[in-house]
Length: 331
Image: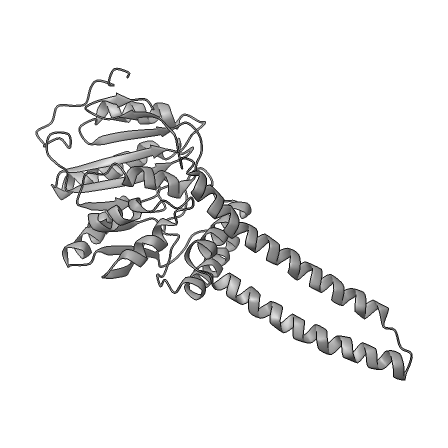
């Protein structure tokens, strides 16, 4: 066990380590050196003004730029409220949030991105809705400032999620959200290999609400989601919350089987009546069947792969270091 990073300005406000915090803010970070300083200045100013005991849990998801050093610097300045979790590699946004959820101490948990497209100044709006009695407050981006591809892909995923899972939320991709502790505890209890936090929380919530939030244009850095990651999220969503894809594929197989039977008798009729072969059409139909079969095998593989990893019980993440007021742990 390493010595704890010392320091922290002396302040009259109660420390999260001395008084149980009422609010926990969880932020995953990956290569955000251009945004870290401004993020903390704005976030801590906002949280200090609320005048509630709070903590900020930052999860460094294997950053390779100056982000780890900057997080250490900020911990030295504000160790009264900051806790830094460092992964030994890059595990993904949702896994990072889950690691924060496992260690929160507050009764209300707020999540947000580190790229400042979520505004820290809007956190009080989420907290006010929680006070009204809602157990989950989800932000949805009223006016998005992403590129055309990201915007359209997000809409498609939202439609697929609603159709396949029956889980209704306006914007699963917006991380500016507030949860009551009971919802977070239920999410943590799940042992799925791909934990789709926003959908799980919506499923567990008894009284959720969506509110519009500002989506600012990214000032620095770039999006961490490429095409492959967006496709992976879509597959995780479909296979993690519904058997709908299998049902659809079963129906598709039945329809194609019926059409294949009709086509076979048509071709048989042509063969005996007009001596017509139609090889080109036949090959096209065979290729169609092969593509459907390959797609089905891939879909079944997704389900089997999830079952395999669940049985193996591989750890979802490995923590290299935790910086907090009481101790710095290595695992």
